[in-house]
Length: 413
Image (cartoon, rainbow, N blue to C red):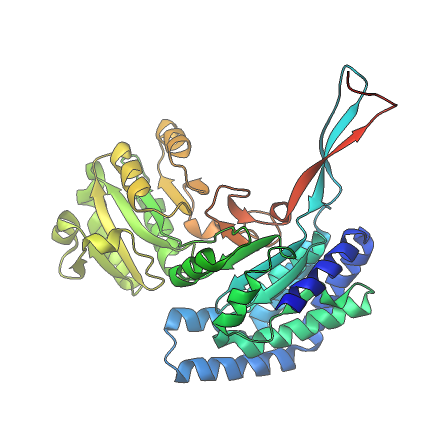
């Protein structure tokens, strides 16, 4: 692992000197090879899926693991979108002139070497590789054991594209093992790795934080909320709630709890419970939701309010207005994504101002908390840590700034 990290550091130094057109060409080559080598990639993924199914991997994780032609094409398009994004590295964010004549500017530079630790989703392999190449960062990719063959196949494709483009092949490396001991060894390489980004379940996040000697930027649990305000349009609210929960329940931006304002509970809660039932979603509700929703609603326990179900299960609670909704989110949320459904502009602005999660929405599904959907091209993760990035992390989140100072002989008195 020390050699892996050392090779990544050497590649990062070379990448930092590379020009944008060469990196663009490498990314376009990655997209082309994803298409031309689709049979190889899908074959390895099929073997991973078969093994995972035999080992009893739960349906949400199986869905994350599975690749098909459409998903692979989506991965290729995501790489092309990243390639086409405006350049971040070298961008001058601010500049000013001091009274003594010094010209000062803040310029975007790569972070250096990123270690990406994640579970199940092979698309993270190409998204992370592409974003790091775009921003002249080297990356070490450590996916979960359930996707080992898929990730290795994708790593071979990326490596071939990099080599054909004249960039250092060690700029993107897939760890050759999924053993935890090897990961812990890698997390000790603080001289060569600049940042660790874990994406996965609570256990993985905790293990990385506990063992890492490298700064960690957490992609933590997605306990997302939809608050249906007293001034909500009921038809719009129903559509958003069902989409936020049921469209793809096994991902981190799916809603796990719905809060209903008491002022509209009698009219809205029964309709919500029916709609969730029709979508195959189990509702776990408080006492009033159970009374209004009927036998289909199961009782919610304290653990349900802060649960990341990653399944067709949703917790529903009646709250006494906006203050109570914000208080519930602060207590049980994970700083990921929250949405208010309302036609009251004042209530919407209060919600946006008072909820401190990394993404806060008005009249929109939490499923839009995604780098691609928000115009970032793709994301390397959704940071629930406020330093140094917060929310979906695209290319800019993989850079920092340095001060550039130009003088004409000034000395300090």
